[in-house]
Image (cartoon, rainbow, N blue to C red; front, side):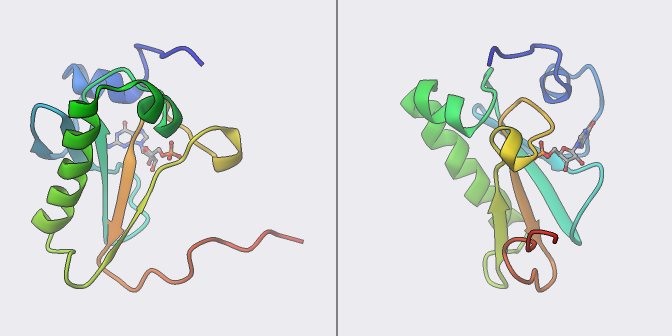
Length: 122
Ligand code: 5GP
């Protein structure tokens, strides 16, 4: 899948639309999810044109991969989630229900998060 330079997170990275940014460095930007699913629900995105985890881990330079994952850990600590715990999640592709085609890692926390996945219906 080709990277869509007009996806919503590309536009946030370019500053074309606002986001509640909580952290930024050379490799990553972190901001609050617009529709939080937990008391804390933050998204961390790499500063580069990568559609998903699959694209990123196959094609991003080592420095960006390292810097991005360090930023995810840093943001969780910044949010005081390291002690109580948190969950990270990255959707890739249609089975996962990925909605925005720019890699993003969700960080959820602030309450007991329960079991990992919803059971299939029916
Ligand atoms: P996905 O389903 O792709 O893993 O998650 C996309 C996430 O992006 C959703 O949790 C959704 O609420 C969030 N989101 C979509 N549009 C925006 C936006 O314009 N701003 C912010 N901050 N979050 C967004």
